Length: 522
Image (cartoon, rainbow, N blue to C red; front, side, top):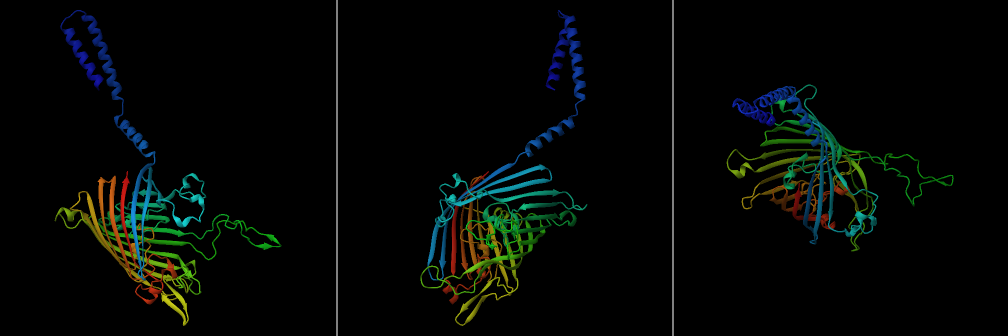
């Protein structure tokens, strides 16, 4: 375009010069005619260009260049935790722990309806842990990164692909399907204290990593109800498959047949005797979400859950004080579990009352769990041999038990500190409450699994926007029953802390965690 304007100016100047009758008029006339022909040729060439097609081609090239790469992000947190425990006999234990956690996130979208996402995780305490000296010295902290190790230490926290569909079976129902290692930690409600976007599950009852699949159906268009969706979730927490070459191990006599040592059948990935797959299936249903007020529900069933089953033998003395303080046991699968939760969330209270309420998040959630023992297993109980015969504590053999939990919280902009939020949370769990919150990031134990009361207050401050932040958090757990952080079977037995048996076992009474962290995200 600029060339055409310049030539037009030249042509106009030449015409003026010719019209003035100056010397060399014939030459100027010839040059003018030549310029006119060139301009006509340029106009013809420009007319042949398909500008729309050219713009589309440029967009496709840009989209390809932008999407033909894995996009990385970094989340690095350095934390210092002060951990404190108080036991029933009045003793206490304290420690201070520095830790680093690095998350390397990745995403790739080869097309508009296929997305891959992954998250690599590195999380460790500063320095070598003392009680691992007897383990393989390849993992000794001083040399671990310069030593060939039998297992890779770059752990995959998440890895899944996501398909996005515009309609389902001809109906105006956008839907997604996903398979892989699921984003199943730091879900809704629990995400506020973690200062990050909510992931898949309801954090009140599920906060643990697993491999599986999900299928989500957005129902808003067909129901005209804001934010309504249904999501089917399923996962596997434990496989029943044996490891490869499970029957070939040094120093082990496999069997004798005709005086010859037999080194196994050669079959691989066979079933482990006595074990079945530990699976979970359930759904998330959001009946309403207008962006400010929302309701979230979930329900699931988990099969073949494991726990510690104590042998039918007298208690043993493990610390040499002459008092029995432990029982021998094995890790076994003992039954199934049903779970459900309903949560009410307000992201902003009222409409224009004041700036603080407009930016306040408040929630209340109720959760329920019920055990389903297999045969005469004790899913949340144990039988202790005494001089007067067996004594049943907690659930009897084959007995199902129900537990409940309440979780409430609120967070809002801090009025005293700029670019900061403050939050308070409380939860209460009953005697037989059991959650799937084993991955909850509180070093003192999962507060949402507490059989008793838990209190928490936190302050998150932006130092350089969301790129560099800091948080101070205090968690206090007041246990009423033991087994809060256990699995199932005898190890999950709820013994009342303020009881004679609780005193005999020196039950954990209180736990607390004061954490300060600095976090970099990019």
